[in-house]
Length: 436
Image (cartoon, rainbow, N blue to C red; front, side, top):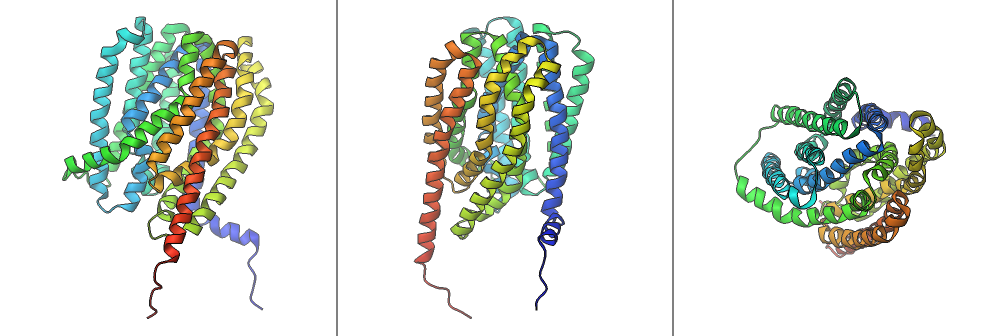
């Protein structure tokens, strides 16, 4: 009789693999980073007060839009390209140069357009500093770390960045209000710039930046990623546009309440993002032209189930413990964050599976589906926001997100499954390979 391997031994053997060890280190570092990040956010929410924290959050929301433009789809497609293409150094170099040029142009455009949409010098400084910090963030060579399975090194650098920011915040933010928010935005910009420089130097010491074929490679990246960028901007209507509407239609104080609730769900979305980073190179391999679609389908179901199950385990204590947490650590007015938080907890459960489905969509190069599905869902979110925010405030923002986002996910899932079926059928009619 053949000896059987116990479930415990199977799990133990898997934990001994290099990927599992990297995942463990990445988990520890990312949760250490998250702990510091939560401390910064909660400290600022308490120290700056709802209005100051709301203004800083407004700058971060605008900066996120800038990030989506300047990053130019690299966070979704560059790992795929570095895994699937041969000229990796040239593609990486062209991507960084392209993003640097875009970032410079966007910052100039924002500065020139201030009189049209931002009033008051402090608010302009906050927005400009957050946008500059987001440009540096968009220049992170994160895809190289992921494609080389060195994401744990990236986590060390970003953890150090977050820790440095926390120390500066404790030392320099002694009072709240608008002036405190201005200082925080400047610190955010400086620490992001430092992190970007360290990452680029780290990558440059391990791979040669290749400027040959720069123009054709940059043109190619422009052409293939335009749809991704437009889709990413449309996606921001689902999650971020209504936060801007909340600040403009009501006030920064109410945005501060919502920002705290959104930040608390980051404990869930951070883990989801970390798991996706580990899965993404494998997804890029599974979706190559010659790969078996049935394996890809099984992996998508498996990854989605795993990430959803873990999300539920984290959401439950967050949902139950949030009232006590807010009551103990924040002024009484922050109790207004609880109602949107409850809705965002429901959204966070399915958000992980949504990211897995989107990763398969991108790796199958169905960018046009990503665009129009995001556009439809974003239009629904903006419409719901216009109807709900004046009456319900932050709850209206959360409801619009919870209702609209699944529309995009269902559309994307349908087309991913259809592409898998098409490839399966195509493979089945190929002539059999002759045996040797």
